[in-house]
Length: 394
Image 1 (cartoon, rainbow, N blue to C red):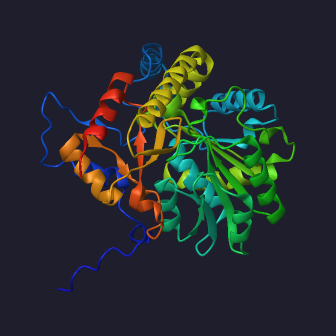
Image 2: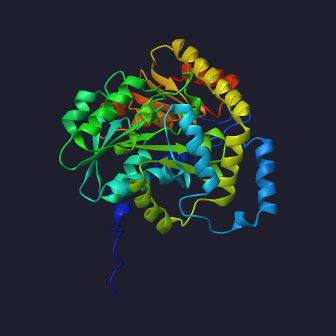
Image 3: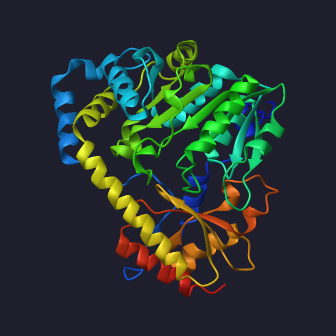
């Protein structure tokens, strides 16, 4: 009998999920009661949605038969209309419900967007450090991820991006506030990238998963105020972070109607429709949780301040970026960041991610840079984190 052939599909072109890999570092390690694990590896909220939202979900599950059936592929009409209305107001632009698609989380929105505009052999420009799931999907789809190095300030440079554009380029991707660095991209920079993309006839995919935790007041950019935004812009959004709906998998994509029509093909094939209870929860949250969300944002911003204070007092370490749920830092030790991250688990009870999970293999930042996701650790916990990092000796 011939031996089974090894996996040869698109997934074989990519790497193992970094979060799952890091969790395997915990195998066989016991954390004593007086030094429990501090898990700062993942940004997903660990607390449940607020009680009022959970009640709304329960009532929908009990009393709304449609919550258990297939729904429209592009999402609940009421949710699409609410997003169009609220986004139009927030950004000072004009967005129609027909330009909104509801997805199974923001990762699926990215996959759908890439599938709508790119094919195997095409190229998409990703600033580095990149969000690893974006790189993974491009690998699986046979689309070449072209790294755009951001240098010491972690901000993409328009001139450097322009030099990377080729006839095969289909999009530039920006994530702001950024995962993994936390940086909030200046509105002027985002506008310049949009102009660059428009001039070259390519898309700007703007992932705003962490928009609700931006430290700036008001709209973070004015792209939707441009009446012709749809010729270039594809915006992605997540309800997972804003309303703690991670398990319900609800995201959104905003784009011109021809793009949405292509996205519908993708969504119908991979999921048929987004989670029905999750969509109802997202709609209820949009209509009822503005004050709660503002309080949650204030707490995350206070934790960012605590992170900045902690790094300022940490000898030898350099905080390169912080915002939304993340801090990106350079460590002072001779050992590489991946080795350090693994040793911190056993020797300090800290699980964080090394820069190598977010950077091309040859990038020098993979040796000494790290990501800390601080949204799930309160301010006393952050003090403990910095005490453990300060006490670590390689």
